[in-house]
Length: 225
Image (cartoon, rainbow, N blue to C red; front, side, top):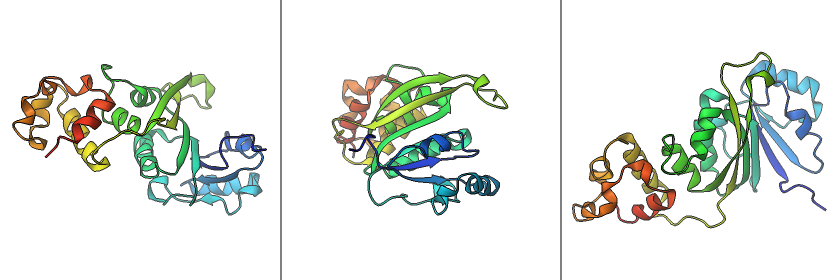
């Protein structure tokens, strides 16, 4: 019987194998790892021979989907490109069953934030349009050698139980980015180029971007020009 909810797993940035060594112990999964650093790739192959043929020596931002079937993503995501990694995963959203990743704490909080929160923004809305996000726990600096200057947080993404109705991903993307690009302004001023004047009379446009839920943005996408 399959004991784990996934069969195919992509590890992002295995580095020195801190997580990899445990992942390799999980029975019955097909694991791949994406690692850009040549020295780390060589070290991993030397220490974990079972990874031979399973390491993608590239940036995750440049690879196609690593499996043709559904898969899950896990990793201590490189902090400098962690948001870009999430948007890459969104491109694969129809194949992704779960994501569990460690981010800089502020980024993790932003991804998980709900409307009304001051850190709620573009990333929050676009990720939550497709995934239910759970902030799992903090990871303190002392957990690392050498300790970083920032705290970390681990979050889990699971596909939304009820898919969100929107006009299109492209329209939602345009709307959300325009709304938060001028987040101190009312929506009426921030997104006026995307709607007809009659639509802009609606009271919804008196609000600011951070006051709208993910569902509100999705519903609004149907009313765009």
